Amino acid sequence: IVAGADAVEVHVELLPEEDGAISFEIYSGSGDAQQIHSQGQVAVGAAPADRGVVDLNALRAQCTSSVSAAECYEAFSGVGISYGPAHQGLAALSCGADEQGHRQVLAELKLPSCVSATADQYVLHPSLLDSALQASVGLSLGSQANQNRPLVPFAVDDVEVLGRCPRRLFAWLRWSAGSGEESAVRKVDIDVCDEAGQVCVRLRGFSFREFETGVTQAASEAFRIPQSGSMTFAPIWEVNGLVQAEGWPGSDRVVIVGGTAARRAEVRRRWTAGTDMEIPADADIEAIRELLQSQGAIDHILWLAPGETIVPDAEFVEEQARGVLQCFRMIKALLELGYDKRTLGWTVITTGSQAVRRDDDVNPSHASVHGLFGTVAKEYAQWQIRLVDLPPDGTWPLAELSGLPADPEGNAWAYRERQWYRQRLVPSRLSSGRSPSLYKQGGVYVVIGGAGGIGEAWSEYMIRSYQARIVWIGRRKKDEAVQAKLDRLAALGVEPAYIEADAGDEASLTRAYETIKARHGQIHGVVHSALVLRDKSLANMDEATFVAALSAKVDVSVRMAQVFGREALDFVLFFSSMQSFSRAAGQSNYASGCNFADAFAH
Image 1 (cartoon, one colour):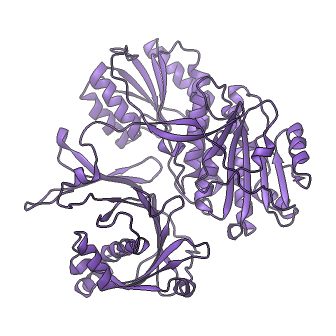
Image 2: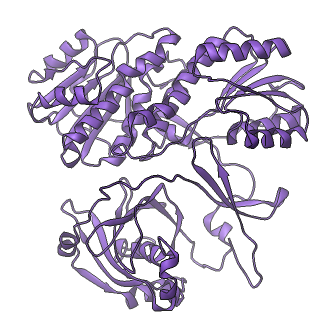
Image 3: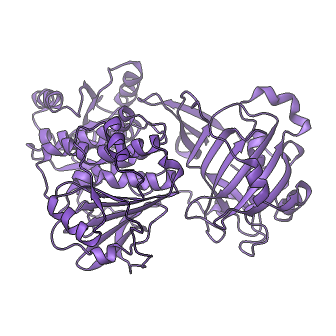
């Protein structure tokens, strides 16, 4: 937001979601001139009993290079950032490196005296939070990269406000996994704690963008954000030369779980000291904890997805108990046994769950595992994650597999026809519109999760552009909030119909289908826009929360195919998510479901 000589009117809009969370948008302008400047989502819950403690004495011993507050603000001024007295909360800053040689910063923060009277008005005072972010300058002091280009806050993956912040704080900053001084977009992890080291605020994945030289340019130009149009990306798999790491497992304390008897035997021939551990599909966290405890100390877990054949669609839901839910329970059991404080190797192998090539036959049963372990890698950096998708038949490349490096981001390797592949996002162009549209004027379209934000937006477009007859299916009752959305769309054309049904239940969805058929006769397209966002770290997530977000993707996708598969549809549309690719910390349940839905759609 650029504020010149005149005032700028800015709006904050709060949007309640079905799961109790609140989405927000900060925007200026109105109508066609409306521009969103910031957006995100807030969830309110009970603070954990154990908020975590930062060892300040250990950090002081490691961070021995001191920088005065005056030097910091002089450095900011040199690149064109002039902080007023209310924002000068840096009292002292020390730099150093941890035991692995990674750069880190410890900053002392004090509430500026000019705003001391406002201390009790905030749980987290904005002057203190801004000063914590300012301390990131210490991560780049002495570096030749990007000198004279100010770094400004751009986005954050996750913020946890755990308690009220006192007037004096300490901030511990370090680069997020996979980030660093040479990155164009930089991410920093920050813990803000009181004088005893108790964490008050935890920020993960705080990213910065740099202004080009000449900070008087318009902000939109400096950030290079297009004012119109969209930036579109597509995930693709590319051949990647395998960089060999040291062989693993490196000890005899290896546990092999899952897979077929033939595959386990094949694996044991390679690692003769590995021991099998059979986990029943219905084993809960307590039972799995006892099984793991019986193995003694474990250095490496080799988890093989069960089965290598594609099961009938109806069984995909049940397969989750043998796949991602079993892994979730194993992780929870390991945390109870104290493995969150230990180095632990994970090699997770699925078979044919990824569409590496367009003509691949995909087995979506355990694609959800990729979402889970992509998140695990970010939440537990001390766990060495190797996530691999192998062909469902043929001999596995176990010799190469033993040299596969761990990935701190939890990104997968895939192996096809003697070549290794890695996935990345590449710029993609949307259709120019010259192809015939599958949308029909006056067509009948069923939107599962239509009352949510994505479903509502798509419905509005279809009503405006095609006078479509829309049917929403949702689990919630048609309350005032839903009716208000229906009334708004009714002003544009035919009011959408609303049917209360559980789309994850075949019988309930079948009844909804029969109602729609009785009213309209023909259905032209079906849209999956259902989602449940219940973000929590794995340590704080219970199984019901994990299953809620997973089922919104797995169960609904499967039942949708079972019920509407009998129709001669023009199309089925799945709304995916960036979480299929980025798999952020705190979103293990949603990322797992999204990865399944993508594979199932393929």
